[in-house]
Length: 360
Image (cartoon, rainbow, N blue to C red; front, side):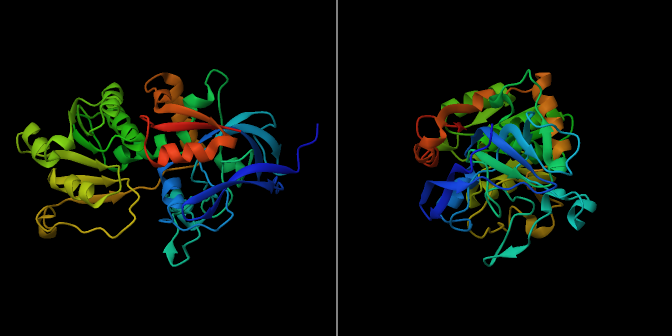
């Protein structure tokens, strides 16, 4: 049975508008793989693109969280078979760049464009066509594809390409250790995964900052010991009260706003670490007092979602082990032809939405 020559794809048209268009099915190069997408989703970064806060080319297919089936393999690709279920990470390193060889594969990227520093190895829906389509071309397939075991559903592994990898990396980069006290600011999808990651890393007290009751409940299920509702008072004061004035070992910022970044810095113990996961759309200011004028032995670390097949394999193994269940993060489901409705829902955070599953 021959493949169609055209496919349906969600493309960036202009700020405030994403449209469905027919595009050619990509041609497969020697090191590529063509996936038939079975499930994908919308990320908060896609909303930044929609709003024009993060620049991408007009006509680019959006999306970077693919689950699918290998439709066609490039002539040089080894270790995979057509018909296999796979995922690919949102970040697709080449495996041989300077960034990869110095151990920072996430930063294997194109550098400057449009007067804006492009985000490392994030290519899907950023510099090349992405996953919100019927088909997706995966570059450097042997570096980036990971097999999905038959016992796992699409929705069980849907968080692995980005949200799970990013959230977990907030705890990993923050150096969370056994016995640590950790504060996670915002319990959206990434913050929830950061909460789960901090628990897996050994944190014994996790304080989640969140005002939405449904998200508070999911946070508790994923490992939060205490909830601080920022709508009822200053979260900094409450966290310092809960820690008897000591502060937290690690604060994870998962929203991408000045106020949460500053609050995360203010709750650190001396020598604590602020692990920043947010995507910021304006300049940040570091408060002088919270930063102890630069003399507090604090660390501020940023992390771009780790990608590559070994990272994806490990995340799939975590899901398969039952140590964390992220399937409840999928709260809504839409067919690809209704993706504009999905964007409207997700962008305005209506109806208790966390993540939406999109099925071509």
